[in-house]
Image 1 (cartoon, one colour):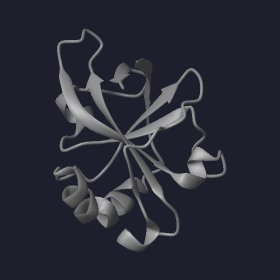
Image 2: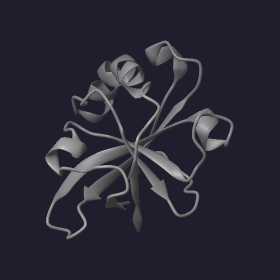
Image 3: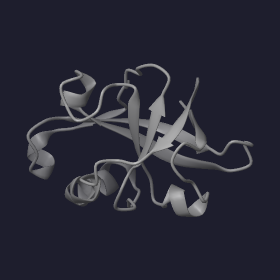
Length: 127
């Protein structure tokens, strides 16, 4: 399945949460995260089907974090990189800072820098 959407700016709080989750994430998925997320606005909502769930007691949070493995592709499909969709449980229920039409991507690189992305650029997520 391929999801396509537009890069958008986030709220700026992801750096803190990625730092809180990075040790757990590295243990469970063997990847050291870049401290931030790539936010992508889809045309319609997407339900994350988690490969893993990080429980609040594992990182000092208040809710589950749903994680789904994916690949990020550039517009011409010349660049592919392993990544993960992360979604706070409240966002999965449309009760958080984002609705389900926004996905937050984490990985070991800064996609904005690597792909020279700016807001409104199109990016694909391969599930």
